[in-house]
Length: 452
Image (cartoon, rainbow, N blue to C red):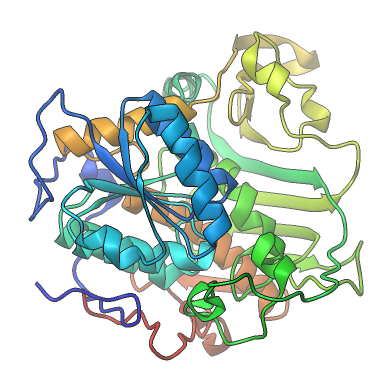
């Protein structure tokens, strides 16, 4: 088996299995680090020791995993993560700066990828080629093409690749899906997805100097070369196309994917349009929009996505509501989904917001409270490493959902256009400018190519 190194990625095109064909499918292990018994602990390595990576690591530990490695380019973050794991599991993991050391280790069954978004796909492909299973944070790719390459790698090497969209493991969402399937909503022709959050401007300020021993070149990876900036490294990368897809990719993917789940995973849309801009914070340092409205045309329904980054009165479902039998005040809930059936309206909250259905005059027909499903999602990943069953948020199932993000952003970036899309080729029809953004330009020595 030819493997890719951190400085040279290879991938190979191959036939992709449709999401519907995955039901009940099992993935046998190919050259795994070791064969796991039903009661054995799964050895996990954390790659990318920022806040989200450490939080998911804590959940995996609570589910019974063993953390054998932590890996990060930033020495302070690396030490913080190693010490936190040591305090929780009573044994210090190995702390390394080079992810190849993780992939070469026989003491690693799976990896948790908590790196910045532009590294998610390359690191996942590397892990699959090394025979490791993967939990990759959302959004799982920087572009549409990368997401397809990840699916091909997962299938070729028969790896478990779970995406961190934990709504896919929530019992209240399973119940909502069953309600939709029952037909009680009637014909659903319009789905509205919201990501109407508060926010503020981005002012990068002083560039600072790189920390001792930190490789800015490795952190940039495939992204174009640029001078180091401390506030891009910290969290500002979310606001630049080189690294991210803005808040549609960072947070909106949760609602978009849940909407796709509720609609039975309908695959790719045939049309997309987007109107967006930096309207509230004109002149700041960000590239991504702070107001964005996208629409997606499927065969028998339309899905819309509305996003803001400024109204102070909009809020995500609070932690208090998520822990109790309460519903959000739906009108000002920033992250809700609305399904407009011919008979009933369904409103769904993500991450524990619950759901209700309504008819005329605000009459509530059915309701169910919800709880966040982080632990269930992490447990599903560990269970699938042992059983080799396809996980709840398999990378191929999530591929169309994340493609909505990329398609909406592309429609904005080419001039707020309406675009036609061919789901078979995963290319835009008669629009060369849009097709250039289906795949990024990779910096030399950090390429992801067609071969896996």
